[in-house]
Length: 303
Image 1: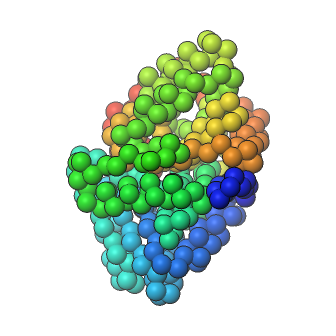
Image 2 (image 1 turned 90 degrees about the vertical axis):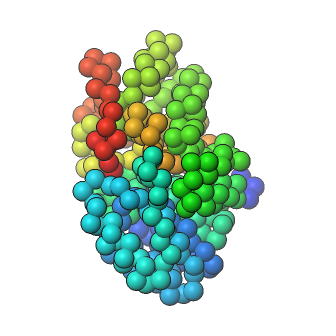
């Protein structure tokens, strides 16, 4: 776990499967008043037990949960029933125009987790995923406002976060990520097995022509892990982590959340991790020889 303090703010990174549950559980166990949880999938019994213990301690636990996950229709019903059975307040996301895919936690309106990880046994143990914990109060406030708006699922409910550290889709994803990628001057390094959006691929090709080193990982063994997480690293200075794929469904059709960090220790650890993965040529994707077919069906990448 890497951390770097700037004033009152600390971002912490967790990469290894061995530290994922404990990182999430540490956040839950330190919560004293309110826990807001955004869920796409959850089947990890230890996670459910920890949430039950959090409720039992007197913490108000509120869960915003998707109603659409491929192959999970009955599981989502069962998960909702289980969460309610131990006292959590569960709100199914109810905007029929948009799939809900965001993955984050807010503890006591002051500490957050933004992640690519689902709260499943698979993601806790066997996937390549990324977790960023932050004590940034502006990030916490922005996510809290988003959570409350999404609980109403109003078409006009979206509130643009006050902090540029949050990227919220579909309202901001394409514009913000296009701007950030366009501004790269030396390198773009991506972990994402769903880089299929033609505009993004075209932009990456243009950056290569300008002399920017562009590397995309998503094939192969990924150090023995299944590629699931999404990470962008720009100029070895700025990292973006969250649920957003570089595909049309994810950029344009889904509620997604990512966090931007420039904390040197976090960025350095991500860069070193990327270099380790990139040293295995099997992990590298070649978007230029045979560009992947663009994905138009949002259920094709239901992760």
